[in-house]
Amino acid sequence: MFRAIGVGYAQSLPSAAALNWVLKDGLGRLSRCIYTACVGSAFDTNLKNAVHRSFALADNVGEVSAKSQIQTVCFDTLGLLLAASLNVISRNNQRLQVGLPFVVYPIFSAIDLCGIYQSLKHVHLQTLTKDRLEIILNTWIQCRYVPSPAEVSKLEGINLFEGRKKRTWPVRIGCLDPKRQVPLLSMLTMTSLSAEDYYFICLEPYSGLRKSHYGILLALREGAGMKDVIMGLLQASYVRKAILSHCETWENIAEASDVSHTISRQWFDLLQNSKHSVQNDLNLLQDQIMSSSWAAKHILLSTQEQARFDFVEDNI
Image (tube, rainbow, N blue to C red; front, side, top):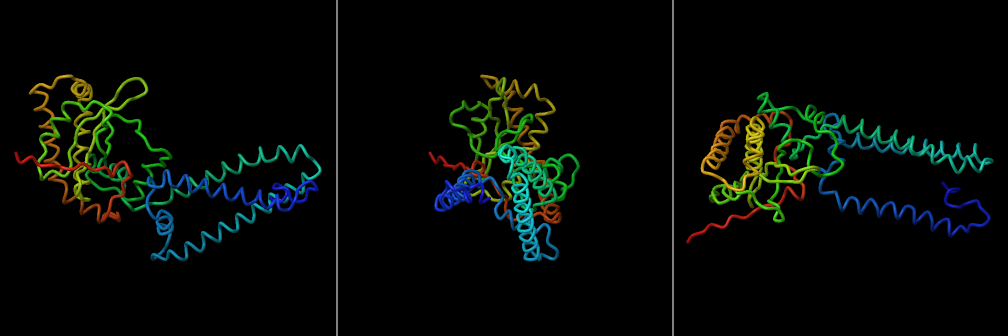
């Protein structure tokens, strides 16, 4: 490492070497800060504590944290010893010194990433997010049981970037995009809201690679609690299941420039039937979520998913 930053060469000054070292560490830390500021809200809060807690016995998080720090120091030391050994071996071969980092770095980076991926696969986070809750609700609709955190962690994978998942009629939590034309069915849904409604479900368009596609939007109202989120997402899942059984028909309905009484009646019947299913399932579903080791007090939502609408009642 010291040779790489210039120590030991006659044409380099110790102060220049120290400056390079400071710049290297400083830029690295600055890059991590910028990355965290940009995408940090998409990660679960207290993720490190959750990772350690999932491995701890009898909630002894301190023991696991100490062991993880020891492992980090040991492997860092072994890495430095290996780098120093390779540097000594290749000190008389300038070409080997120049080309060695380009060969060794990708190999060890791949090993490091594989190790991180394998470790994350064995971490079973118990906090509820939109994706995890959607997996739970889809499993509930299909199999009538709530999967454990271990089962969900095998299905959710690792999402490096936010965005639309490549699936038919995806469910999104947020607000309508003001830059896009609002479908007529969505406008009719919003006009039918009452003061007792803390969410609404509507259809929304989004652009694909070749043509526009449609998804399901769950819009939450100011003051909506965890129960409202579960109810809304469960109802949206029931709506999605019904739409997928007649996918082509609903695509034509969503693309229609005019909405007939028959179409609007069909849409509101779908909303009413799905809401009735939610009311029948909610109590048993919540009990099973609590008994399946899920942290069911809060649902962690991203910045976009935390957007809310406000209801203004017209008294005229």
